[in-house]
Amino acid sequence: DLYYSFSPPLTPKVVFITARVHPGETPSSFVCQGIIDFLVSHHPIAKVLRDHLVFKIAPMLNPDGVYLGNYRCSLMGFDLNRHWANPSPWAHPTLHGVKELIIDMYNNPKINLEFYIDIHAHSTMMNGFMYGNIFEDEERFQRQAVFPKLLCQNAEDFSYSSTSFNRDAVKAGTGRRFLGGLLNDTSYCYTLEVSFYSYILGGSTAAVPYTEEAYMKLGRNVARTFLDYYRLNSLVEGPLQYKEREAEQEPEHLFHGKHHIQNLPLFWENSNNSSKLKKNSIKCI
Image (cartoon, rainbow, N blue to C red; front, side, top):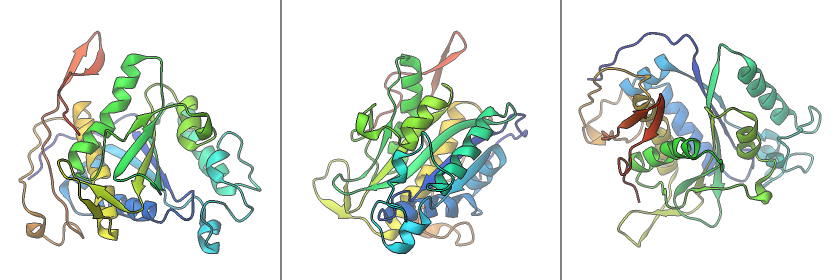
């Protein structure tokens, strides 16, 4: 059983997720599907997340490119992930609409837009990993590193060692870079990448081919990680207990697909009203 105390937040926290801005990156759709399937399931963790957070999901930013079978560009030949700074309602309509929605939420004092995650697939690297932004503020950087570290503990195919934080000029105009500069220091913007091919588990050198189910499992673990993150930030209060069982023992009505729950011994250290991650409180490969 999962126990928690619930009182509706006065300022709801919003998680905004996008995918398939590059039409050829099919794995991103399966990861996004895994997130959606988990969030709308009867799983007790999904219920907690729905009670405490608002999820906005645009699962396909480049539908015309997908329809045409393009690998990277839109119908008009644009790489949409380089036009976040000034998208045209005529040439980049999906990007323009999503950006307007994000800006409206950001300017609304009754909404706290806390996460933006853009899902992609990578053609050369293995595993799942993230790109984040570089900030001069050390505490902000530490806070930004928490979610990928938690995800690494929840998802065996996610690699924190492959996760990087950069301001590469080649990535200028991407959603992660543009929104990272637009939103305030309480918002976290990431690109979530997953390999087209395979992943390597810790302590092994053998590559495990990705399947559709494995991609969706990564998506479910992304969704589940939000609970761990907000437990650290005390949005979800009270003792939380979930009896671990093997995936095949889960009641089918809770959720479609294999999954597992991991309890994470994670703690925050409060100093001068600021939250910092305790050193060595998260161990990840």
